[in-house]
Image 1 (cartoon, chains in turn orange, yellow):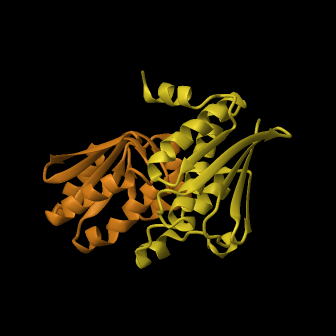
Image 2 (spheres, chains in turn red, green):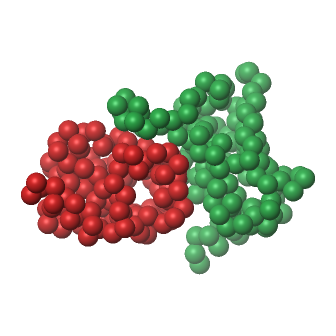
Image 3 (cartoon, chains in turn blue, red):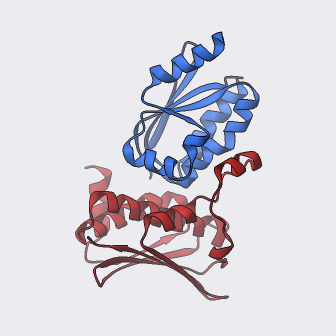
Length: 119
Length: 150
């Protein structure tokens, strides 16, 4: 069994998905379920926290690609926070920083969402 | 007992071959197998993570594309150490493919096309010193990955 879990926390109407463990082709569907659930509830402002994520493969990266268009069409965004160096290097290698905001912590991501709203 | 230790006991360190069925649930077993052997071979922590990821990508590609998610096919992973290189040979008996037909990923293009895959082969090439794919049609495919031991 791959060790992976995720939980969703709401903060100022912003959804924070906290990831833990190993995100690979076996566990990626669990994260897909999280995004599908939030989208079905019209919750499009999403922060994904990577602090406790040890590992990601391309199957995990694909989940972010699968939902970003839909979320941005609905004026939302996926912002990514607290990646460890290795996980960041994989996102970076594939050019994800061109498409996604990758921030140091959830507070920065939440402030970006709140700031965007007041503009 | 933690999972790493349980898998360590299941994978005998002097056994250089792991055979799994083509199920994604076996990816963690593959990563543990690679982790143990690459550590024993003297690879550095960062290189161990590179090799784990590359082998995970190779096995995931076989499960998805070569076997089209048929869960009961066989994938063999062999480890060799030759000329100061850590070598992993992965053999399957599914559909073959031309790795040269896979373009380098372009994330902006992928976003427009809503594409979610196509990163695996690129990551394998980036994280390993050498990746060689060979195929005997209607017989077997072999992916050989090499990492220098520094």
